[in-house]
Amino acid sequence: MANKKPENMSFEESLSELDSLVNQLENGDLDLEDALKKFERGISLARSSQTKLTEAEQRVEILLKDDDTSELIPFDPESDI
Image (cartoon, rainbow, N blue to C red; front, side, top):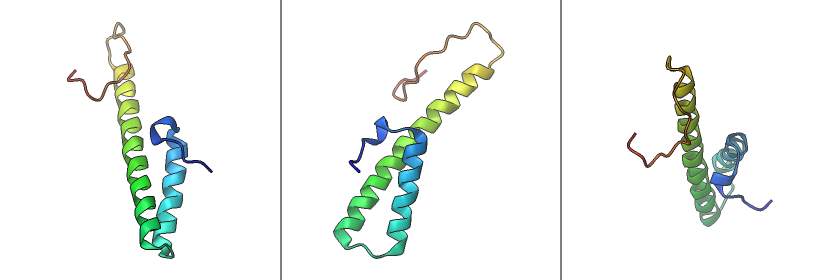
């Protein structure tokens, strides 16, 4: 399976792959170089998943506001809104 970029994966896909990587790393049968590559991939997946969770949390927060005139805008983690 070719590795997709974490930002192009769904949250569920990222979580599933991350779970698989953790199991492989915990098994301890990998050589150091493979373990480091899998660890690096896992960090990328975890960061991407956290970003997706933060975006979802912001969207839910906006939807639950009492103000019905609030405009939904795409989440930009770099903005200072």
